[in-house]
Amino acid sequence: MEIISFDSVVGRGGVLLASAIVAHRTLDVKGTLCPVPVIQAKLAIDAMDSGQILQVLATDPGSQKDIPAWAKRTGHQLLHTVTSEPGVFAFYVKKGGS
Amino acid sequence: METTVSPPDMASIDEETFEKLHRAAHQREKKRLAIIASKGTLDMAYPPLILATTAAAMDMEVTIFFTFYGLDIINKKKLASLQVPSLANPAMPIPVPNILGALPGMTAMATAMLKGMMAKQNMPTIAQLLDIARQSGVRLVACTTTMGVMGVREEDLLPGVELEGAAAFLDYAADGHVSVFV
Image (cartoon, rainbow over all chains, first blue to last red; front, side, top):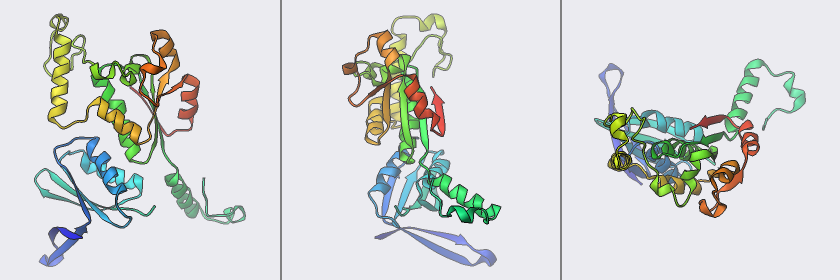
């Protein structure tokens, strides 16, 4: 297990809060379009254990809606979405119990 | 449909609880997608296969019914040579007047252009999408009427393709949630 991403947010009152999400696996589908991100995410999460977290890195603008829709339909939990650099979306999906 | 409430309790539950249980049961139900693929050009082979593979990744149950020219998509001899029409296609990447679109070589050029654009965006080919579809349990069905009319034999089709008519497809689609005609 390794720490993949730290993202910092400024909380109410200007207090800096740091939240760390630990991903068990990273899937890099940058440079692909629909249907590739969702298909690859499905294949990746199938090989993981429930409760584990998958990080998906995508550049398809549609993935901002597609990954949440896929997670909702398949019983996985989208914990967080970050735009880590311009045009790159990082999704953190926790595998649901099956 | 599963329910956690036994019949005698049903009368006493309030509307809100009923709504919650109903929604939960509905969400658990496996969604079913029924697609009709009726076109045999390269550009029109993509939408049914993209929808089917995505739906399978979303845990949906999927059938594609290949009919008329759409049958070429699952024809072993033809699926690798699907083309983009250069005639009567005002949506070409570079608009071409019909009179030029009719020239020899224009269809090949339009096809090469789309293939190049797809490859540049790392899009899977039709053959790759068909592989993904089959591996993820998408049912591929050939319309037997089309096979008869066009003289297509079962051995011309991809292995595992099922043969059905309209009634069997409608029977499947009638219990479905989403139907798409391409």
